[in-house]
Image 1 (cartoon, one colour):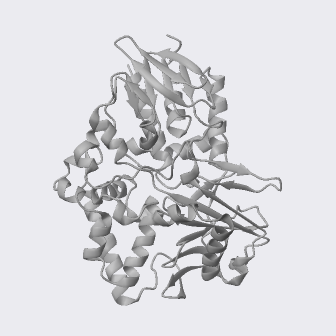
Image 2: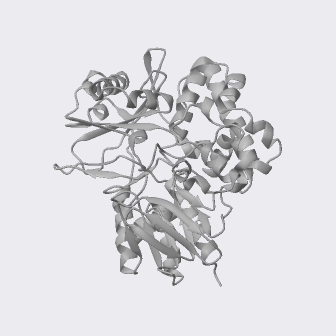
Image 3: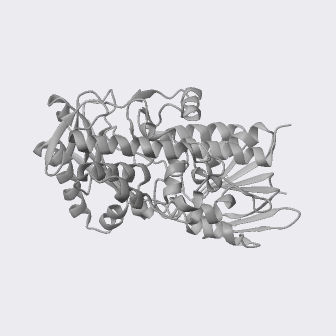
Length: 450
């Protein structure tokens, strides 16, 4: 054998698997299609010192592995700016509030609070390890999150805000998400409050220099420990028999005892597995298409919204940008607003002219923060649906019927091929933390502790 284990993909799942295997004394080769490490994290640096996380960027309470990595590699962690009044734009006008209670009126707020409580209760009943074995799983899996909202969230503003919230969580329209998957995802992410909060939640903190920089530090450490990395080399085929596995990629072929595949489900289908994947595994991959998101960054000379007493945190019922954040680093004199275009709107706007998309995004920010938002000193956006080796972001989202029909294939090895990636995670599914969990699990399958 050329190596003990071949890992397909150098994102956080692949890095975590490589770390665990190297610690167990295994020889490891990581083969990555991109020319860089980090997977669905990506940090771009610009000539004036500006840096932007074009991909995954946040960490918060419960992301224990990410915080441990930041400490291990001496990366500064800082909290998002949330001081001031938040903005809610509904029915053509802005309303302002502090804390977690949006100004929807008595009826709207009551309906929204009931929906949060009901979904949270249903989510706690879903099994994290085997969601398809949850009582009434088939019924939950045959309907969409959108179906549930239409039946139970009757107040217009509450439903509009909840839709924007779920599109921000999943990067997908509620009508494209299995209700069972949504409930599992909420449970996996420690609840709706955790998934939606910038204080005490999953959007609380950032890492100085970006999350790709953290991955690059991990890469350097693994190389010092003799882990071999091959970049710019997509895997085309994987052959296995009773004796081992041969991986064919653009840069060459290697043999190993085992393979860990960390590719997103949709991209896994592009690899020629011999023998072929079980039909259930293929169906699971087909039923887990990635979400779609365009991240829109507007850079200003100063964070002018703070002078108005605004936090920079905004949500609204009018697109294409439905949610926005102040992502200005604490030591920066500039101000940076981040807006998200997600789901079906992301697919539509990713095909639009770049100048037209810029104008639409800045118009959305102007609705939240005033006309000054139309005139940034720099505007940058990134369409994740255009990335060949991602196909979308943040993660694969289960369509109705997929989990109960094929969910048990998500983590079941195919002979000598083991599966990782955030879509296979039990905890923090869809997040970078979930990717790390999955890599640790896959490594333990290949090299179990004595």
